[in-house]
Structures are given as structure tokens and as C-alpha cells.
Image (cartoon, rainbow, N blue to C red; front, side, top):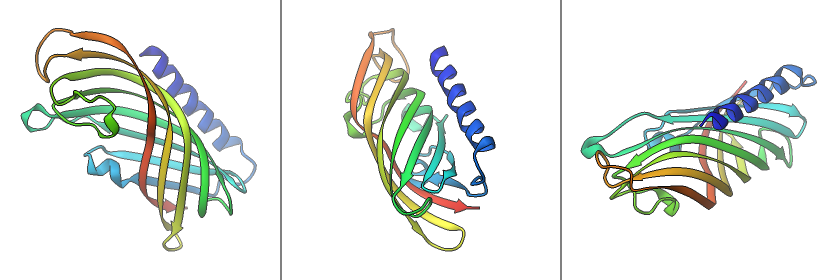
Length: 194
């Protein structure tokens, strides 16, 4: 847990360093939100800045502190840092990227996508994970300031978890590690470009 927080601080420091010391492109900044995240009641926010003619740095965070009826929960926080290379120009068209991700979770009485933990309907999982991968995306310009982006990333996530027999009670059933290879990022972002 301490290592995850240290990595997040490191990437935040790296992001801010590049932002304040890059060579004249910092006037191109975008803020964004992932509509898929809001569909899962996970407030989220991202910022992206141009670091060269065809390169940007994207930082993103999401949190879900809520429990729902029948004690359904998908509580989490996560942070993601991504370098992007744009084929035409930054903030327009096709791009590829490399991303890192880290966070914590507490999931129970709900079904997760992509088969990450298949038994979350009948057990509760609590833990943390770190990983990374590659991304492909496309951004459409809607107006002078507004854009829309679709992004999909695949990669690897290492996770440490504790498993409990039900969503509200019980003693520890299992503690272990999970290696996940698959979708690590999916976004439909609404973007405001400065």
C-alpha cells in the first residue's frame, strides 16, 4: 500500500515537472471526464497537456466511495498516467500511448466486467493493484473548445487481494496475488481544450 502511494506521488511529481518545464507548448491543456466512469457512479477527472508537437501527457483519477442497496459495492480509487503520441497533431485524430495504473478496491455483491474477479457476486475482495499497458484512441473535434475521445488499452495488472465469504461479514478466506492480462483502460471522454 505504501509503495502504491509512493508511485502515485512520483508520477504526479513527474507530470508537474514536465508541465512547468516543457518548451512552450503548455498553453495547450485539456480537461476531461470519462462518461463510462460516470455510468458506474465513479466520479473522475483527467488533465492532458501537450509536451511537444505530437506528444501529450495525460493524468487521470477516479474514485467510487459509495455502497448501494443490498450492500453492493465497487469502492475504489485509481490513478493513471499516460504518454501519448499523436499521428497528426496533438488533440486531434489517432494516437497510441503507454500507460501506468495503480489503486485500491473493495468489491462485493456485484459483477465485474472482463472476468477480473469472477466470484464477486458471492464474496468480497479487498486489495490493491498496479500495472500498465498500451493504448489506442481517436479524438474528434466537436467545436473550438470541445472534443470527444474513444480510448481502449490492454496490458498487465498485478494485484494483491484478501477474499471474504460474503459482502458484509465473515473472516478472511484467502489472501493472494492475481495476475491479470487484458483490458486495462476503456474510456469515452468528454473534453474541454484550453
